[in-house]
Image (cartoon, rainbow, N blue to C red; front, side):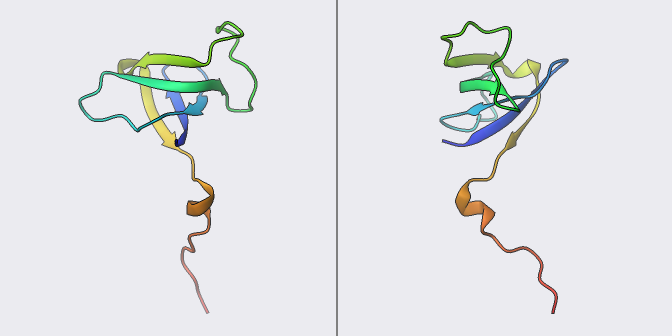
Length: 79
């Protein structure tokens, strides 16, 4: 389950998890455990909300956060 950072139009980014990344033909995304980037609760959600659905029309872009395995990839190396 990838952790993503969702950049919503005219709002602060929202972090959460998605079961699968959106397909080009999708019109909405489902995000589990939505929270602010710093881990705090979103002030516009009720305390017991664990899943949100957003229309893709409101999303500027989605960042996919690296998992532990991806962080071990070595990039350029100079001797």
